[in-house]
Amino acid sequence: MMTRMNLLAAAVVLGVASTALADTFTIYVAARDSEAHKAAEKLVDEKSSFWFAKLPKAMQKAVDLLQGSNHQVRILMAQGQEGGLYAMPNGLDASKATFHLLGGWCPDWKTRDPFQCPTEILAGEGRPQAFFSFGGNKTMFQELVISGFVLDAAPSNKYDAKTNSLLKGSSRTIPLLSLSQVVVNHLVIADNVFLNGAHRAFEVYHSPMSNETTVDIQNNFFLNNVIPLKFAPAGYKGFKTKAINFRNNSVILNWPFNPDKTSSDVGALTLYHKDCCTELNIEKNLFAYNPGGAMQHDWPESRMQKLRINENLFFLNATLFDNAKPEAGFFVGKFGPNPLYAVVNVGPGLQDDYSYEMKGNVVMDPKVPVALVDLQAADSSSVTAKKTVMNDVRGLFGLNKEGGTVAIANYAPRMGLDLKNLPFPAEEKARGYGVQAAQVFK
Image (cartoon, rainbow, N blue to C red):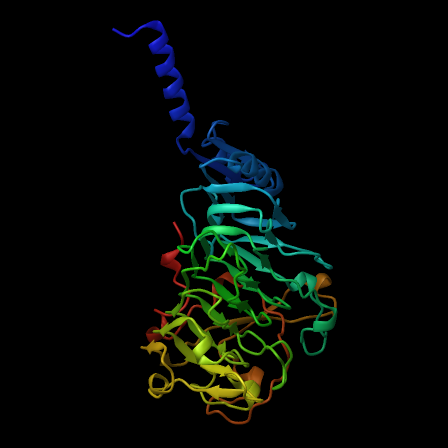
């Protein structure tokens, strides 16, 4: 028979155990009086689920729930547009918690489809920072997921009114997403559209929480950015990221740092040496119309990590180097001491020339549509977008359908998001490569 003291002790133990359990919290973000707001009102209880009209208050609520906890906190954002730049504070301890920032929810909250119910984050002229920033090297997450957003940098860019070329010197060369050395054990960047960046979309500049840290970059559109992505994590307490997986992304019409053959950054994906990770897996992606090459490889092979490049589609990725061959531009690089770039083609000889695992890579025209914007003024913030859909992008490079001469007609012309003409392949054989609408992060 338990005494009163034993009962009290048991109650205390049970209380401690209950507070240690991980809880799931859901935060809905939708404009006030919108259809999504009305649907959210039926779902919130102000205990484990909440609604906010704007993202800043939702982010603050998430910080309060995450700090020092082992909770799972999810922010769900409805279809629509929201202006602003958002950041997590440095020093947030969510080292045992998971944080999912998920856009692309249709108004009934039953379906998430970032490509048909887009959540667009807008920034105006003079954008001083990334759209999303995550603290610094004292901010920690067990798992961090950023998924389902359209990040369009065009409003903070300048364009030539006659040619629609990006005016790089007067545009904001700040990444669209900044990881800021955030410490993570699992990082997921999925189902986003990185559009019109005048510099990188982002760098994989996280800090690994352990030697088991993995990064999944999947199902994203990288469209019309200048050198969109670099695989260069930060160091942290001697740990190295175990694996970076770059899968089912569409890397289309991304540009070199400068449109010339001597620029220091030309390839769409900048490969880093073995400090990047133990293994780098590049699989099932679509690389098309990137004039400076699909991947830039400047390090000697002996200094690289375990590299797998399998089952990707390539098409016309070396026009900067006067090369109109569809198979050109698999790698563009100096491979160590070489003074000039070497252009490496897709072909069976790749497996003979390099020790990396490279199999199942194909060359074909994916026939992706590209929606360009017809500018009426040099200041893009005053432009009303008039989209012109191109089903064959080769005209930008002075190419006819048989190849012909190569000349870049204009530089990083502004692209628009056209839901009726998203750049999914029209070529039936190419549809398994790049972004897959059915593989949105759950």
